[in-house]
Length: 357
Image (cartoon, rainbow, N blue to C red; front, side):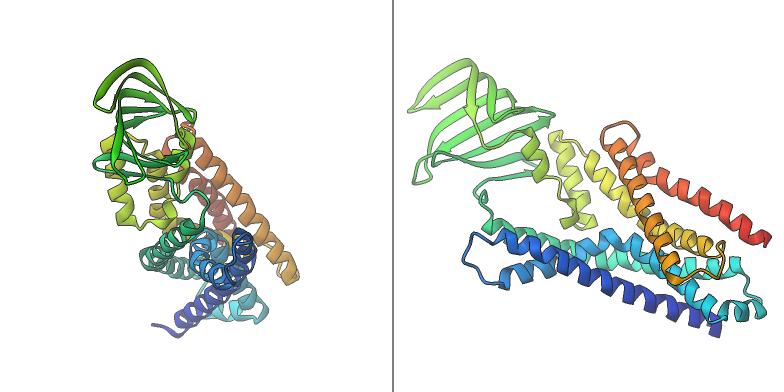
């Protein structure tokens, strides 16, 4: 590797590590208050809030890596400009476009390493974080999971333990439902069968319910069944996809398909993972192009403000586009990639201006 490439590589990687460390410490600091507040009504020491804080911080870092890459690229260019190293590189035949090319390759490789190794690591820690936190949650006696055998719900109403199984879920409807109520010794005491159950509210409406209790069978056209779950709560329980590795997401998507549950959120999450290396690379190029198109006599604070403003603007464009995808206003793939295309076009315009200098 040529000396100038090695120098740029070391400088950029060092900045990525420094900025990542700063954001990691900020994540620890800001999230700590939330964890302490979670345990405020318990007698637990600071051990659990601190441990949960460290377990959750890597997944927060995944979300802010776009900011990290953009700011790191900015400071790399600032250092090259202030030390007159940009002029030195040009004397060696490294023009602006070639410099951006080197930085973008480093960014792409670094983002691939993050998504292949660090993402799986953070997902495992996030899963452990949720498991531990669930043990202390006030509603940890409730549970809903989806497997290849359908959707399973563990519920409890007025001390009565309940297990619910359904073959399919479509919107607010459960189909082919079996509800089993247990006594204190966990022995089945009552069965409720229903072809279609409306779970929009906590008072479920079971169409043509068959009830078996004490060996007596009863059929009711519209039977009301009280539950701690409704369709909104079930959806919220299945929405924490950041605690799953890529392979677990593939497996979960197959399970969702088998029970008719919407895979829209999983597909959206996977598309974001697929686009992650390209997205970070585009942001790195964007930051470099902006830096090389502004006057060099501005203070560092000015460049930092520009980076923060650009990061926030791009974040909201991404968020708005994702919402359009979630609400079926845009196809899932388009909702993820459209902001990247917009930033790429702006970056391309900036690169033409650089080339003209």
